[in-house]
Length: 435
Picture 1 (cartoon, rainbow, N blue to C red):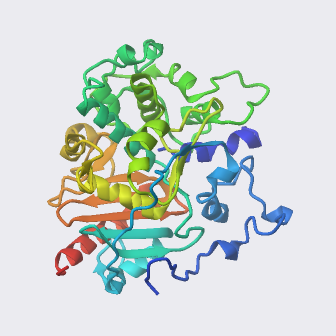
Picture 2 (cartoon, rainbow, N blue to C red):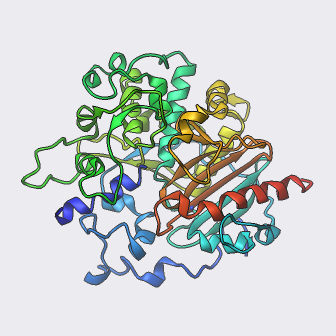
Picture 3 (cartoon, helix red, strand yellow):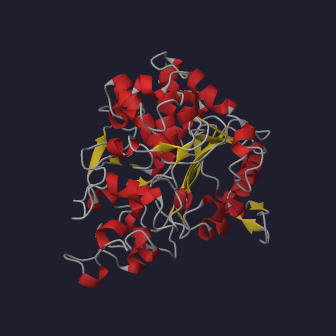
């Protein structure tokens, strides 16, 4: 059995592999105050949450924790610019709550308003043609709160990787061992950068959280900032763990969703640019985007940003980022990100390789640049994270949806039936409106 410190590490990995007026929040039955966690100076002992608690990321505690990672573990900031926030234009549409859709599976027809609750949403922002048409908060979240985005982080790391390929700083056909020699003897060594970006690497690595012997737990211990248990002499950082991963099969054959690909990419990015993913994102994007707040990454014991799941930001700032991607990297006449990098992501990856992973409900999809690509008639693509985190981009509808959430079930399969049809229904509704 794992001790308390070890079992508490699950959040570190789960962050890896959701009246209408600007400046106001709607009342919601799922409020953080109703749970009473961490209220008071000091809080009562029975209402305290600590990183060393083995249940700090489950149940009612999850609803508090997703907004308070910075109080629980070490982090590194992603600095904002010095010129202040760029004003978001608002054209709020209260009728959106009445938009109906048919969920997949054994669900009755549902409204957008009902889906907010069903999906355990903490915050929801919709932009259409560059204007905020919907904004709503609940749980621990308000306009200024930094919320964990879990595996949405992977898509940010992948976006950096695709940018560096576009700018010829990285060669997508280069072997990982050529980019990071320390990984030469690992499973990553003979994989190409493209295979890392599409997660078609053949790794002897299990990310089955239900299995106490799965490799994911060793990875969690390696990435923890806590002192190791006395009997643990394993790797003590993300980088050192990656060097131990063995190969299983042939690279390029099948998609396999494994968080360690993102951290391998984070190492490749750092080695190629001399900057961590946090530093690169701050310099190239966050400081130029007109955000309202500094963002942050959680880090391991040597300060390495968790490139697979450690990013935290506000709902509105994630909306600004989504709009930048929808606008092909251009903001106020300035090309912040290369349009070609975003176009490469939108093309998608190998559908046949993706299908081998058996993701039910995502038939015909693919994965490229660590983004999920739907290949539907709207060309929608998305960043996804456990417990319901989403940046959904629909180029045809000129729509961006950002959802932050604390769904009690980690896998997106738990909320896809009441999410994916809702996104399409909203796109159809917005396209039918004259703005």
